[in-house]
Image (cartoon, rainbow, N blue to C red; front, side, top):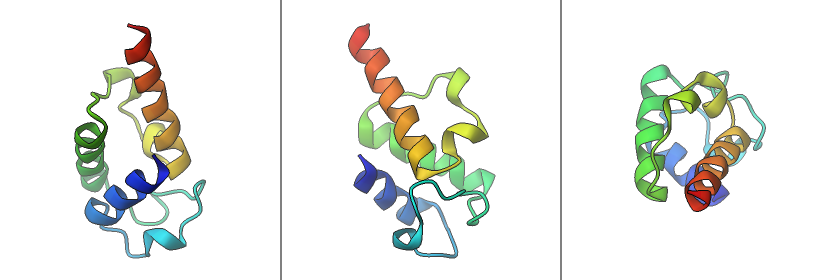
Length: 83
């Protein structure tokens, strides 16, 4: 999952730094992730993992770092499996 998220971030994130240089816990907004790019990233993640972000998880915290994105996607996948 981490590798896929990193690939998507590199493709649509528009960051001025290489994604490979970012730690999993690095603040993506401090690294240059814009609001527009975070929406593009969300859409790419939804497509890649065949999920839909619920409104409750559409916030800055969910996309704050690669780790946060991983946790959010895992939470959505777990909820889908439980349904």
